[in-house]
Amino acid sequence: MWSDLRAEIDQARQRLQLSAQDFAPLPFTTNWAQLEENLYQVFCRLDHPTARPLWLWERFRPGAVGLVCDDDPHTRLASLVDPGEVVWLVLNETVNMGDKFWFYQGTPRAIGRVLAECYYLDEVYLVSKKYAWLLCLNHHDVLFGIGSPMQERLLACGAQFIT
Image 1 (tube, rainbow, N blue to C red):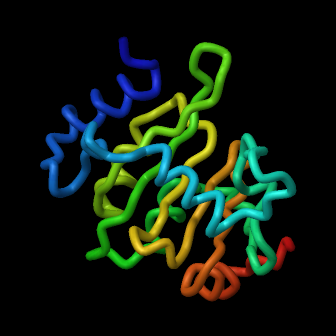
Image 2 (tube, rainbow, N blue to C red; image 1 turned 90 degrees about the horizontal axis):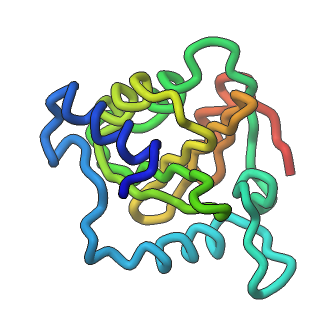
């Protein structure tokens, strides 16, 4: 059985008639646990070897910047990524009393279109497939960036250092 979020994402993908090259879930053969662990190791400060934050933005490494998005935050999020770059979309959801990350990949334009169709979004992460940067839009409509060039792009929009 699919969660509400996964079903909503799939319905949006179908409604928008997006190709698998533009937007798709990562294959079932993907080592999702390793991808998730890499996110923690590269972008977060971890105080305990096994403790993982519920929201990554609460534990970003020094150098992260944040910007309050008053208007159309999903469009702003996708607009910061180079249009030709294929990136990971990572969404978190509470499933069966626990938290789960869902992984997709796609172009910024396609991701922005899918996000605009969805209501069950809590935390949204766009991640460079080389782990060079991460963008996060949290449930407070604060846009965070860590790693170059996202820090510079957000600072140019008026963001401030948070850590």
